[in-house]
Image 1 (spheres, rainbow, N blue to C red):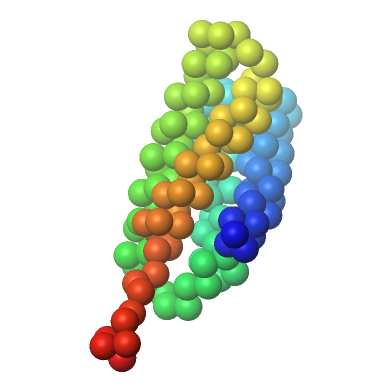
Image 2: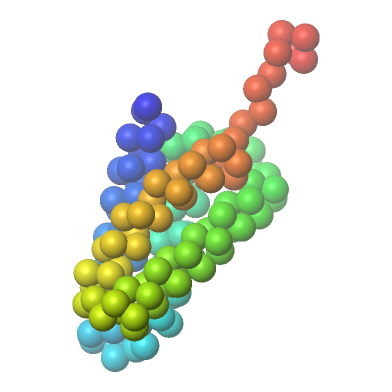
Length: 130
């Protein structure tokens, strides 16, 4: 449960980065909301990788495989996030910012599951392996 709480805290920071930069890009910079979502998601993803690797899952090694898995999970999540955002905004006509909160909230649970069970999963050693 501690990992989930830490993951949640990192998620709150990532959400603030993602939604804050998303709002900036669409309302101040006048950017298309899907492009703004992609750039904002990448900013949150960089923060997420650093904090999840070092603090939540405490991966000390610098494994290229961990990075590739994390990137794969987040590319999948970005696709789901963008599709959900498109459906909420273009088809259901929800507000862009409200839609962003919705897709980020739903994505957090799936992201935790994939990140903890696959991307940052640590090999369990038996006493025979030592």
